[in-house]
Length: 268
Image (cartoon, rainbow, N blue to C red; front, side, top):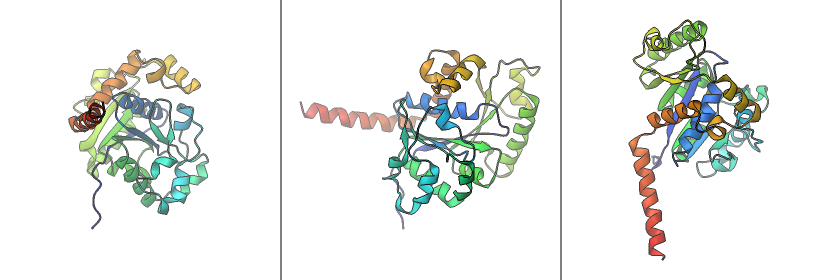
């Protein structure tokens, strides 16, 4: 019998029922907000056709998911880090393929193996999923500890989100799903406090609308959690990160720190 790894990080998958509502921006800034807690964070771009994580983070990766898939039989949790690109913030990234047609090369089995390997080497693995629920994206949702479902206060987005929540309930995944309302103070006839009720949810996390800052962040390739860390937009992501970090993660981190401290003390 194969022995389970001693450590396996939490898997947080960011998804949406509609495109163009900031899912990738959420994924990147959430990963950086989590990393500021001094824990190991990896980020997987699982929009295998049109993933934008490399653009959002201004990365020039040597390897992508395609390269890992091509050599999957010779890669394990000890060597997967060689294929990740380290961002200036400290997070480690596995970007999507650089051409849409390469998405056809990525099998469900390969996806599961990649997620398991990255989770073993991280405290948290953030996954930027594709829109909706397809076979590949469903594999990722099933392997997630937390599903962050992103929506906005627009009728089209809310309608699709409600349908996706109903689907997640049917397949038994709604209990680990958290609702994330992006751009909540945009001009809308829908009151923000009404959104959880509209979607039959008890609660939601809200990300304020700051089009200028978000747009600037995308254009220069520097996430606002780095460039404008004191903005309300960034603070909302730090708050979101706090809700995701469990006591077990922090206690493990403290134990690691105490061991290192003892080593330094004993060598004095």
